[in-house]
Length: 287
Image (cartoon, rainbow, N blue to C red):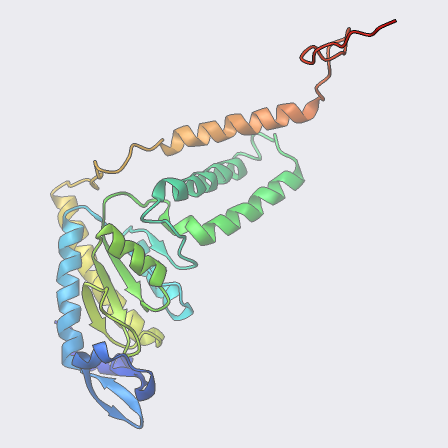
């Protein structure tokens, strides 16, 4: 179990003002000082250990854990944590339908991979002008912010790790609708009713977020090592509809691009001869 002193030094026990609290967080509140709620550190440690064991079990089964933290204090921590265990993450904006309509979101992922290939091969195969390459580069930057972290997202998703459930309401509702367990850092002003594994704590301080997320990352890393030792490949959900592979979608997009460029080289013309429309009935003209 994590050391209580580390939690106190990182400021995990500081909550919000008493006037902004959620009554459902009362079991985790120790008291208050100067009008600010204080969270029971012992319960933080217990809930953190419980969530860590759950994530370790999910990772040992070879399932995917999606890390979500779009608020500024959590972005760098979530990115580093998910990258270290080779898991997908969302740090810029939650795309609606990432869980419930992933077949559509995957099109944006495929577009990003296609544009990255175009930029990588632009020097060897100069089929695009400088203006087109500049437009593609801007599209790559935009897509990286939105879907760059979920390019390796595979099904089934075993769990969702969220920082600040109030800000990530869309992700929380989608996970609840899809039946995906949620591990979340919940402050005293948030509603924990939709969270499966509540970790009470300060979700505004970067040090507090880093302390909690790093502990969860260590547990996930142990589970990943167990899965690699057992040679458990990431599972695929048979209930999900069959989707076109990324390579096939990329080839389709390249064919459409070539067709578009081919049409732009020349204008369609009518064949020489009679230009009269044949689909309209002719009128008899009386002389």
